[in-house]
Image 1 (cartoon, chains in turn purple, cyan):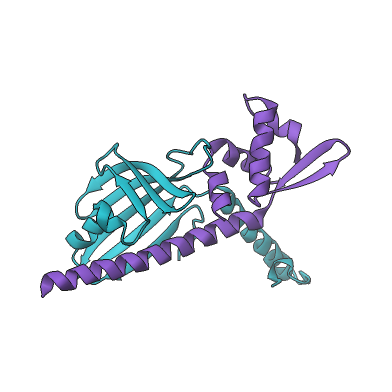
Image 2: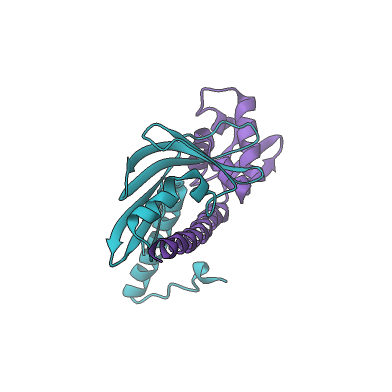
Length: 103
Length: 148
């Protein structure tokens, strides 16, 4: 899950996810949206795939991608759990200090 | 319950004054007690924060608003593997409101990937379409979204 968050931290990778949100696109079609090298886009596609955010299939020599929606839902669930855990910790330590000050 | 899925909002009542709670959001030693292991912060608008949650998981961003003891806003991203960080990719804000002897703290994390919204919208379209079929007397069939 940390991998997915890391993958999403890069604006170009978020843009790629938007492009393949509604349907499949070949690697070349995705690369055409961007002003960077094909290999840079390939690298982004790999990071997204490894993070569970993209599905890849092969059609002959072409690689076809689509967004893996479960991956995004997992990111959100991870963040919700992350924050609720941290805030519970904050509550505990802040209340401890407050009690000390009031004594 | 929020319906905007690009944001997460969590509210918690803390039995401590806003001044106390705010100090735990800004003092590095106090931040280290609940947020992460290593904390480096320069708490002022434009100042940076970097918090090591654990090895390889590092929060990083920039303070946008610092208003003791009521509001704190910073950008939030994760750092790692020498990759470019989406600086300002998401925003975290804390709002502190006095509540009796304590504080009602609201944490809001906004700017989460838009796809989640699309997913949400798709869900509604799906159910509205089913509703439309049922309303004219047809059978919408088994609900493909109802699995699990």
